[in-house]
Length: 589
Ligand SMILES: C[S@@+](CC[C@H](N)C(=O)[O-])C[C@H]1O[C@@H](n2cnc3c(N)ncnc32)[C@H](O)[C@@H]1O
Image (tube, rainbow, N blue to C red):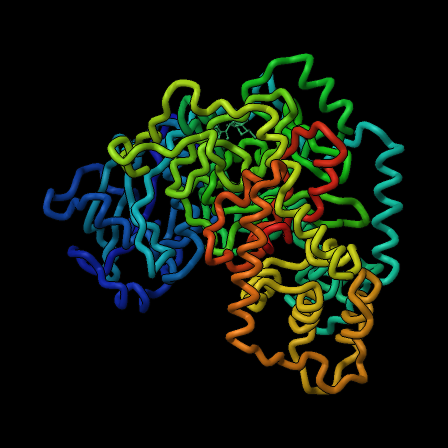
């Protein structure tokens, strides 16, 4: 469709406008569909330019963008109802045009008479700015990226599916995940929505574990649908663009992504840690392309991978990576964050890098207000000192926080201490001490984000292990008080098998989640004492870096990560590796 247009020719768009002046939102709402044939009857687009008065700037044109619709006619655009998805295609076309440097022509038609009322020639589309018409609440100005990226390079080849370098490791992983499948099957009748057991455990439905999967009504087949290219308007909703010299290339959205929508899969070669180390020691690299998949295994997309390899790190990301099981195979997806993504935004996620013993951490140039300074650490410890007041500049000014020479260098032993005592380890320890089955961590990890979020909200003050499981079940069983359906029972059963203590899953318990009476005085006292104990533990060398950040009198509220942070890896020890599965819950303090 789009490809059939020659690159030399300017791109043409037919647009509709109900009056020469700026149309109102309401007028667009009632626009009627005009078939392309009618438009074509009008003849070829005008060669002469209409009066200047009618030729509007693209800033005014942006509102008209919302009402165009696409037809199958190559290179032409017909009029459509407001709210149609074609605006996305137009945006894509604009970006394409910006990339090739071709001028862009827009003809704007009147609603009634089909006369051309305006004509726009945009000679430099890369200078274009328009308001994303999809965001009502936040009318953000989107700058179109100037992409000079060519997909096939000598260094990198596109890869649709993971390549497992060792079949032995592959078989082992498949065998392990099969045990999960043994008791996971959903009983959904309508669609596999938020309460689908498979979805909750981040397992994609297939015919063996879901009755709906053969029909089209199963909503939990996102990886497969993406593979087949039928889920979205475009198979690709992204474009690789040069961001700057420090970050190199990055991935920019060229269509809107709904919250938690799968953007693409992170693919590459699946290798073990020995091979990672070997590869990294052989060649000095400027950019790292390793992502942890399973314990001891990572995806290396240095030479082969999907466009997800171009996604940069940000301390305030708009996307996240999640591990899903698709037909027993673990796969990593890049998902939009809780706010979704609008066209023109650079897609980023938190790498959560773990650095090799002797590696020097990379500086972060994400320019977010809460930038940690270095890619990878959760809490920026003192080695990277904060910029002084005078040198502080807002990220909008396009400047980096100033650092003195050498300030970014973190001593290896300090970094190791940080990694050794990650939140994950602390949580795991506390879970163990409080008698919760360690597998609960894994269960929590597989919960979808909204569930984890709810857990975090419900879990103030800092939750005991008991609370974790109770809250978990409260989320899984939202129809508390009513008779449990067999589906709900299944959920509970799965929880039992994945480590939730039985006493909280008993179906005969009428009030399984009694609200605890909170004695405010006592809880305040408890909080104070816990904060005291945390300040004492600051003295212990291994905990310094993380605990330093906590305010003395007010222990931080527990948080569950909104993201399933699958660490971008470069591991040195088994110890640090073992902390990965606990990342999603390691924010609970
Ligand atoms: C997975 S690659 C991302 C794609 C890479 N930018 C490229 O041009 O191919 C990760 C590397 O990108 C760079 N990078 C990503 N995010 C960054 C950031 N926020 N600040 C600085 N460098 C970043 C680092 O060199 C990192 O090792």
